[in-house]
Image (cartoon, rainbow, N blue to C red; front, side, top):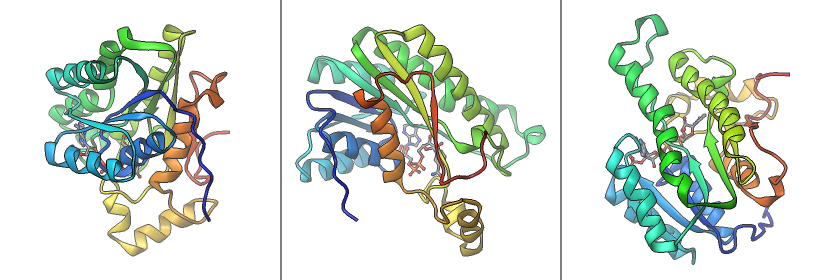
Length: 254
Ligand code: NAP
C-alpha cells in the first residue's frame, strides 16, 4: 500500500537524536520527506555519515553531527552546529535510550541505575535546556518513551521506570514551555530493531509478542515515525503534554 505523505515541515529544521538507524532514522526520514531540513546524530561518525548519505540520496536535506547524548560537549555541538547551519530549530525529537541490563530492579547495580537515568532521562532534559533559546514560536518537541513505561515488561523493569519518567517530563515541560512550544511523546510497542533484537532473534518470542497485540503484528519504525511526525506537525497544534501509544493495541491504560 503506498501512502500519501504531506509536506508539513517545509522550511522547518528538525533535530533527531539517535537517528542513524531504527526508529530515529525513520523519524528523520519522514520529517525530511515532508520537507524538513533534518539533523542526524548518533555516537559514531561512520553511522552519521552513512545515514546522512542515505537521506541525501533520496533528495532530502540532511546534515550530521556526532552526539553521544550523555556527552555534554556533544550535546552543545549538536545544538550549536544546527543553529550555525540552519539558523533556528523548529523540532527536536529526543529518541536515544539505553537498556544495559536484564536484571530485576532489586538486583540492578548502581552504575546501571546511573546510566539509565543519564541517557534515558537526564540527557533529554539538558538537550532541551540547550535547545530552548533557539526554539521558534510554534516549535514542537517529541520524546520517545515506551509501552514499557505504562506496562512493566520482564527483563526491562528499570528501563521501563525511566520511560515512565518521560511521561511525567512530557507533562511538566508542556506546562513550562507553553504556549510557544508544544511537547508530546510517542510510546512505541515492540518494533524489531537492533534495540529489540531479543524479540526478533527468537521466532517463538516474536510470535508471542505479535499475538499480544490486537493487530497481530509487530510495529515498524515507519509506524512510529508517522505518529512522531503528526505530533511534531501543526496537525497537532492543539495537543501538548500527551503521549500517543503506538503499540498495535498492547495493553496499556484505559
Ligand atoms: P536502534 O534501532 O537500536 O537504534 C539505536 C540508535 O541509537 C542508533 O542510531 C545508535 O547509533 C543510536 N544510539 C545508541 N546509543 C546512543 C547514545 N547514547 N547517544 C546517541 N545515539 C545513540 O533502537 P530503536 O529501537 O530505534 O530505539 C529508539 C528509541 O525507541 C529508544 O528510545 C527506545 O527506548 C525506544 N523504543 C524502542 C522499542 C522497540 O521495540 N524497538 C520499543 C519501545 C521504545 P550509534 O550506535 O551510532 O550511536
